[in-house]
Image (cartoon, rainbow, N blue to C red; front, side, top):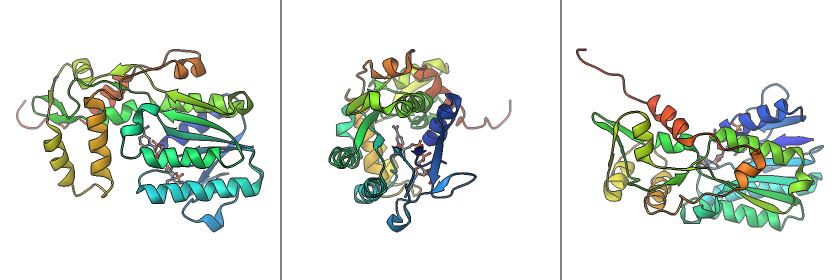
Length: 274
Ligand SMILES: NC(=O)c1ccc[n+]([C@@H]2O[C@H](COP(=O)([O-])OP(=O)(O)OC[C@H]3O[C@@H](n4cnc5c(N)ncnc54)[C@H](OP(=O)(O)O)[C@@H]3O)[C@@H](O)[C@H]2O)c1
C-alpha cells in the first residue's frame, strides 16, 4: 500500500488526487486525519504507525528550523524501517537550491534515506510557480520584487504532484534515482507583462528590512526568503532540465500563467472614485 504523508497539505492533496485518477490505491497520513486517513504526526515519534505500508511517499514537513525538520524526517524514517516499508519516495529541493537556506534539512534527509537500507527515489522539486507569484508585491504602479532580471525554473505544484504519482505508481522502475524536477525559466518581469503591468526591482537590503519588520513571519523565514531572493536574482535557480518532462511525458504547465494567476488573486481591491 502507498501512504502519502502531509495528506491535507497542498502538494499531498494533489498527489493523492493524481494517484486516484490513475486508479492506484493509496491512503494519506495526516496530523489531523479525516475519512480513511491515518494519523501521522512526525512530532509524535511514539505514535507513528506505518504497518501495511510498502511505499512511503514522504512529503517534506518544512516550515520550521532545520533541526526540527530533520528530527521529523528521522522519526518517520525510523518508523518506516521498523514497520517494513520497502521504498521511500521523498520530495526534496532542486539540486540548484543548494544555496538556499533550507537546503541543509533536505540534503540531511536525503543522506538519512540513502543510509536507511530502504529502496528510495529522490524528487528534487523546483520552487513552486505559485510561490514565485506570491513573493511578488503589488504597488500602485504595478509589481515589485527583489528578483531583478533573475530567472527561476519554476514548476507548478500540480506538475510536481503528477510526477510524484508516476514514480509512486511504479517505484521499482525509479529505485536509486534522483530527479531534478524544474520547469521553464520565468522572470518577475514576464509575470508582470502577462498581467499588463510594470515590474520594479528593490534592493536586497530593503527586502530584508521589510522581512525583518514583518511581524507575521517566523524567525527562520526572513533568512529563508532572502536566500530565495539572492538565489534567483543572481542566476542560481534559472537552469532547467529534462527530468520533469520525461516523467510527465508532456511539457510542464506554463509557469508564467500560474505565477500570474497567483499574484493576480492577491491584487488589492481598487479604492476611491471610479
Ligand atoms: N518547492 C517549493 O517551492 C516549496 C515551497 C514551500 C514548501 N515546500 C516544501 O514542500 C512541502 C509540501 O508543500 P505544500 O505546498 O504541500 O505545503 P503545505 O500545504 O503547507 O503542506 C505541508 C504539510 O506538511 C505536513 N506536516 C507539517 N508538519 C508535519 C508534522 N510534524 N508531521 C507530519 N506532517 C507534517 C502537514 O500535513 P497535514 O496537515 O496533513 O498533517 C502540512 O499540511 C512543504 O512542507 C515544504 O517542506 C516546497
